Image 1 (spheres, rainbow, N blue to C red):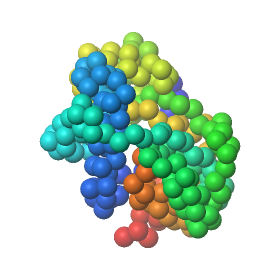
Image 2 (image 1 turned 60 degrees about the vertical axis):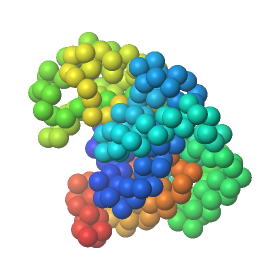
Image 3 (image 1 turned 180 degrees about the vertical axis):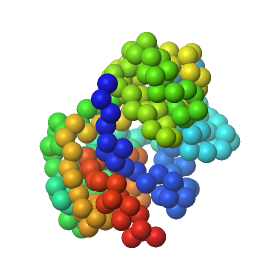
Image 4 (image 1 turned 30 degrees about the vertical axis):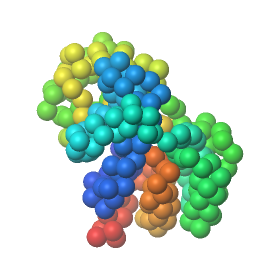
Length: 251
């Protein structure tokens, strides 16, 4: 089981979430409501809802917000959203996948196209960069659940494909269609995970220097600032030295 670059899916999670916590909670609420509306509002009977709630909890979203989002679906108050994926190239030729939930496709498409253009990127057709990514399930555990060998064995027995362990986390990857089964098996063995979700894992990486990272993150920030955008994934790669230099630039 080979590891993958820890910068492959960079999100700068902590800093960005502190800046836009309210916006983040709004996006999490939307995913919870849609998941509950499309399936069973009971978390135990709805894998997508279960994953959405777990993700919200891992990001410290209050229980009241979670309950309110589910009740919105049950009460029939939820808006009708379309789930759309946009693909394109960012600065430096980096591949970018943008996942959106919108009640107005034309508005969202126009905003995404404009944001790419202003940031030195180009919005492409669906599938234009998708081949550079694999759809995977990702389950994350804190390092405290056990050593790398213990987690590796648990992951193999659960049917996972890959494990990456570092000083903070064990990241377990599986086929997207196996995520519910794998996460359930892992939970029985290792306890509740910190995060369980579907991701786009790059299979082709694009190396960037400090200037390239700065330009790309400007695009990612602008996209994530839009209420219709749920997730942004890139195939950016960079050395630890480059990321350290970028972090210092950001202050």
